[in-house]
Amino acid sequence: MKTLLADFHIHSLLSPCAEVEMTPHHLMMRAAAAGLGAIALTDHNASANLPAMIRLQEKYQVKVFPGMEVECKEEAHLVVLFDKMSQMAVWQHQVDKALSGRLNQPEKLGAQFVVDEEDNLVREEPRMLLGPLTLTAAEVVTAVNNLGGLCFAAHVDRPAYSLLMSLGFLPPELGLAAAEISKNSLAELQEQKLKARTGNLPYVTNSDAHWMQAFLDGPKNRITVRELTIKELRLALAGKDGRSWQAGIFIDN
Image (cartoon, rainbow, N blue to C red; front, side):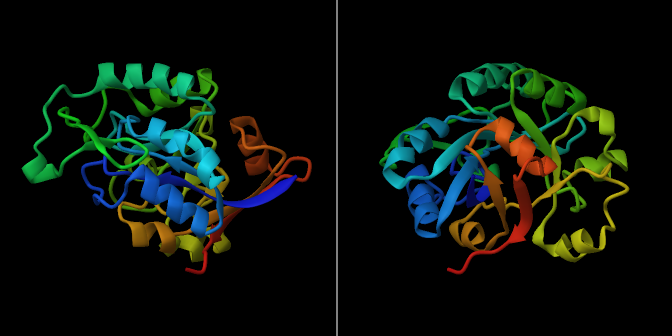
């Protein structure tokens, strides 16, 4: 077994609401310096900066899970994670077909940059990545699970873009692996106030960082697993056979 710190909800400069300092190289460098063992890059409805992150895994000894923050038809956010870029490529194709088709307005929404592992500009994404897909939450979760991925409801305790706030509760049959809460709800996590409405799903805490200090200051997870795979993450969330998942961990920086 190995125990490590992980953050599974981070944005790069491909997300229009993220700062330009959030490059793959800068993120990996700071993750390694902070002692994280695993991270997931989860840009809005996009994955084009993942190849650069993954090419830096060996250099920085930080595992990168291919991820994405998806906005479903209900205008709520879901974070999806995969083991392999081949799975993400299939999922990205489905997302591309479900995008609004509108062009981005960088002067209003922010630019969307794709870069390489040395932070050189590759291109600017012209499509508007923000906004809901034509896929429902149930369709997103089903598709991701069928591809061998994992899906959790993002920042369920916030008033906006929360599946919990949209639906009023999280149906167990939806197939979510966990519910993410922000650091402001850690007291409620301990008091179990949200459990009934989230269907007794396990909780995760991530930075949801759009700028570097938020990444460093935001909550992490301490996980114990045999190896860093989606299967093992599911077992850790369930607390199976010595595996564990502790939310609400902060690092010293």
